[in-house]
Image 1: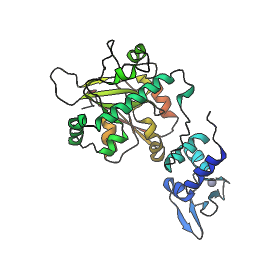
Image 2: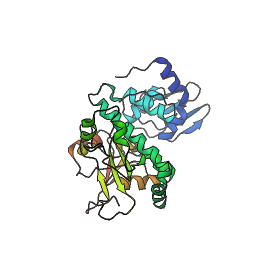
Image 3: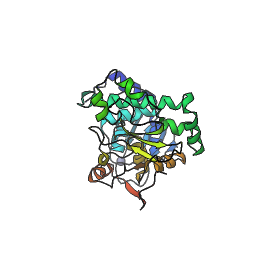
Image 4: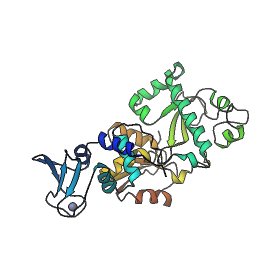
Length: 306
Ligand SMILES: [Zn+2]
């Protein structure tokens, strides 16, 4: 477990005004120096919880629930103390790198590192001269720069990734991870790269779409399962959607990731997608823990990533 020092905790509290944070989740009424809200910690009908901007604390006069901005987020969202810190540091754009789920001690650390490098390579390609046609393709599909960044959309070129990774990493590893071929050519070439992150947010796979209409080319090539990527365990966009799901108290489960991307473009962010599998018991476990309403947006034809 990561150790967070007092200074970091102080900084997180200072950068997250309690009125703004509670006001994001609950509706507040100003009264005198304080704000009041219906208490979410007991079956409340008239506003019993007062929030003090001066003291940066809340207190319920009926059930006695009280604390600061961190305890509020922890208790309201039913997350751990560390997760609450993480949510608040992200909210305030503190960029603290709390590393609450960093795979530093993972036996698969090297694989995670390799995928991180692949992702930055693909993202960078899209912004170069060679990415012009792909950028135009995405633009024509109404994917803005913001959406492209948000979902880590990149571009693979004719070659380059595997040979450069092979300077640092073992060739067999790159092949096993589904990035390279035996001759160190790239497995993904000249395709728009949609990044698949696992439920903690680590890039673990790609779905690569053709954009040049070459005859005989499959529309999508997807990463194979590896030691860090198990289709039945990953929900596309889960780590980004988590906070929105908790806020909306609802999750929308889609068939394909393009639906999630389209929903984001119209301001709906509590959406996730299956990775070409059926809904598994592992998925169910992930969702069940959130204790929210589930909306299934699944088609019959299994070809939704158009
Ligand atoms: Zn209460």
